[in-house]
Amino acid sequence: SQQGEEDPQALSIQEGENATMNCSYKTSINNLQWYRQNSGRGLVHLILIRSNEREKHSGRLRVTLDTSKKSSSLLITASRAADTASYFCATEWEYGNKLVFGAGTILRVKS
Amino acid sequence: KAGVTQTPRYLIKTRGQQVTLSCSPISGHRSVSWYQQTPGQGLQFLFEYFSETQRNKGNFPGRFSGRQFSNSRSEMNVSTLELGDSALYLCASSLSFPETQYFGPGTRLLVL
Image (tube, rainbow over all chains, first blue to last red):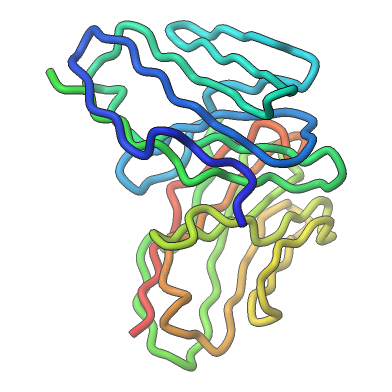
């Protein structure tokens, strides 16, 4: 089974609103990454947060990591139509050199 | 720098055939990994190569194999194709697997 599970499965918001996606995982990790995918194309790396970090920012993106709850959240502020995409979390297991992806959240930003 | 390129972009095969997909990583990246993406199973890790050696492998049958050349280019082969192999196959390169992966556009394989 997949390591990461995203919540919600789908999210529809108006342009300018904030979007929050959550990711939960099952085992200890070294780091957690977020990726974006537009319409079944290649993935684009957004941000990496290590297990000893609690929060990280990149432009309009804010990622938090709570290792005690085995969860992470991705916040996109002031969303734009161009943010419409699928968003995946990916975890690097602590005891295995492997990258495991969650099922993804489909975000639709309406203009 | 040029991004990760994958060829071909689209492929149609019939059951029982074999297929070879190609991936050219970003210049300087020695790690190349492969993923299968399907609506039912999502994104699944196939394997990772570094300096012509397979270092990591996912849970796929032996029909899925790969190799990496001295210039870091990689190929993935699927033998005896099954209908369930229809998927988007993504290749990614990086300086240090499994950290920040740079993905190619993918090869969409349809098995009839």
